[in-house]
Length: 103
Image (tube, rainbow, N blue to C red; front, top):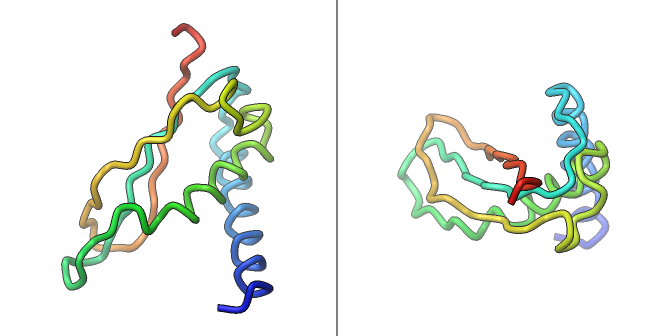
């Protein structure tokens, strides 16, 4: 894929995640961990958990853009955990934001 096309797709994904986070009314948090789980339509192809990393990075950038955390550096984002692919009848990605301020 041409790098301009890749950049356009990343920008669109980042913007979608920003709007999703704003719609969920997630408050500003000091420190978080994020749990990512890719969703797959079927078991037709072998699942590669790490293949969702670019989408997770765009989502984290969208979370920052929405103001939930100040940045995605190590003082705000403590960990990103990838769970195995869940076969859910649709392709997608779920993220769980865990508030780590008390830890």
